[in-house]
Length: 345
Image (tube, rainbow, N blue to C red; front, top):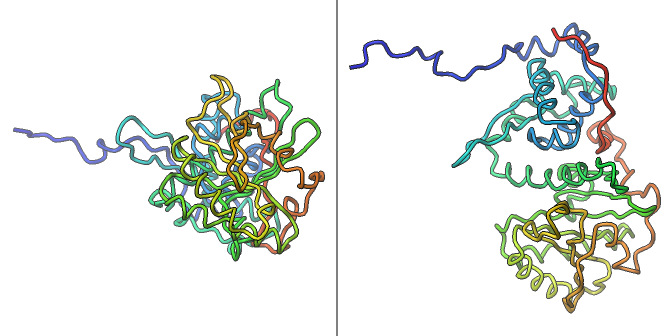
């Protein structure tokens, strides 16, 4: 018989001590915090405001020299309530920590842009509530696509660079009445640039439902006068083959298929053991006849459609903004350089 069971407190995992939500948003606390934050900390807060959630691994590969360095700093930012975190349940193993913007981080993002924090559209309940969202895996997968590109561009042997990354929410604000891509990106390599809309497919929709999105992209191109390629990322090559058949059928029904350049790839297609990132030669362009073509790299895709004009250094779609406080300028995908150490509290 159990005569002395452990107390409820001893059954809990260790949680670092943190301020209350009210104390973490006072002017005095924000002023004290300003002296402790590095440029990279502020950049990370903006990235989480833009992209909602990033895992420890994703943050480490885009901003830190090692996972240990990332974990040490992320713990400090969590204590300061710049970031909040949660760990989803997985059937086997242990899920990584998932980080979202916390209340102090939201105040700092707002103050830096001269915006009242109440008008930022941020609510802590909504930010941390993504832990229970049915789209959590889709959001994390979409973000992983872009963080893999950033990690690739951080290599000293790589000339390519991700220079723009828009979230699904930003794309929705700009184009949501016509299309709702999962993201927008721009890649610079060898003095040329390539931009695209991303459709991150989890295999949960019928192929014909995926193909039904193409008329919307054709309408967007006709309305704006800007033809932007659509890249579809599938989980398997088998799924890619099925979706390509549906896409080819949908393209053949468009009045002007050249308005919708499409290329596909899949997560299980591996060029070699080293080139597993989205910038590798893994993309297969698609035309109305679905002719087979060799796989192209991200930098080569721009030449796959000769009718596309060369992309200028700053296109209207990448630099455009609604000019309102509700659409702050997206952060650069590249983190600031190393910063000096700061004293801890």
